[in-house]
Length: 591
Image 1 (cartoon, helix red, strand yellow):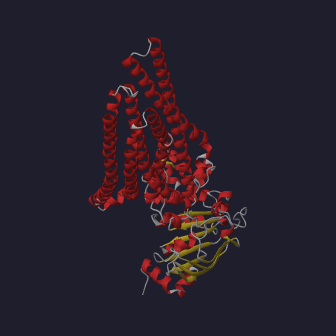
Image 2: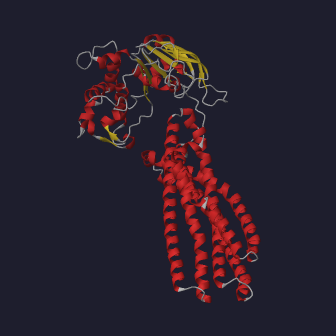
Image 3: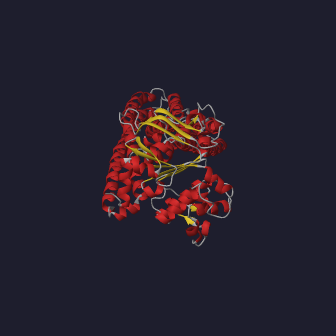
């Protein structure tokens, strides 16, 4: 990851911001000297009225230039930091969109949200402060030190003691604070994950009356964040009074040493010079305090930058950079599994899938059934490359799925996942996720196939009815049917239904299956392109109910990551013990 990528487009802002602050610094260094001339002239009556007015005018002009420099520096620093953060956030979001399921599993959802929001904000604040202070504070400190030495070299010896001691204190504070800020960000992750999980699953929490338990979990996460925050804040709390102590001590030392010099008539060090010297002392030590604060904030921002880098540099285990047929699209929908094995964790000895061999002709309907956790979902996830197999290969239309571009492969596959998800927006907007250019007629037709048109039409606003976030204002069965309609709108060559009718009554499920069957006459009007596309698609149906798959051309029985049987419903009843046991347990027709 190259941070310069986010700096180059706004290089002018990154340059102009510090330059404007330097203008302000020069003004602040000149102002005490001009004030000293006025004070000395008034005290020793060496200034004429006209000269005094000229100096006062010059001071006003200097103040105006300082103001312009300060405003310009703040503007350009804000412009640079906000633009930098916006581009970084956009790239971070795009990166996460490229993650496979395995990549996402390495980060919690709450952590990813924190990294794209809070962590990037910390970096943004660091850049903003850095552009305003990176040159201003050192420039002020060095410039004021030079001006102080010019005014009175012997008196400047006090800096030989105060500055090194303060630098040692600053170093100790930074070394102490850096790991603490890293712990704060981890606690923010935990709190965000807790809140997100609770809000997302609020209906489950309430149904099990677990509000007190979840509240206690939140209080624990909140207390941990509070403790980490206080631990980090102690460093900042300790820093401010210590720095103030050194600053005041240095000022006292200057007054004690410089006072006699002013009173000594043989010395040309006058009261105005002492006033200017004290101003330079304040500027030097205040600049050191600013540097300390900047480094402290930077330590937290560096911890955040490390976390952002982890997201941006997470190796993508699913890419199409080596794809040999990037322009190839899925044409028919033939699927072949050759000696496919898979582990969720690369170092795990246990295989989720073990030596799977399966051929699925284009246009056929295949049911997959088996016990929970036997690998059904993982198997079909190999087709659109949501996971990649560890051993063997998966072919679509005779081509290894790794040789397709991810876009073209997934454009040819439509998948209704176990967890049905709808997004905030209208019903039509949700369905157009399958095809953003779908006409109203196509939307209605696919909803009819999915047995969703009837209940959608009963809504007050029909297909313009609003869906709340997560689809919470529709039932589970309605959500499943809308998700099926959305998948159909994609007009896929391969359609995967992963237990997608579990919340639908058997009569409605039968109507949906009838729409998928290529043996039936069109159930809605005459044959048309919509019907033909659905008939020709290869259909994979994962289910727990025998009734959901018994009409399939082929039924695949899985157990513990292997295929234990394959055939039609009647063939499996006759020859496969596991299938027969499932059938008998569901129908009550056992011996």
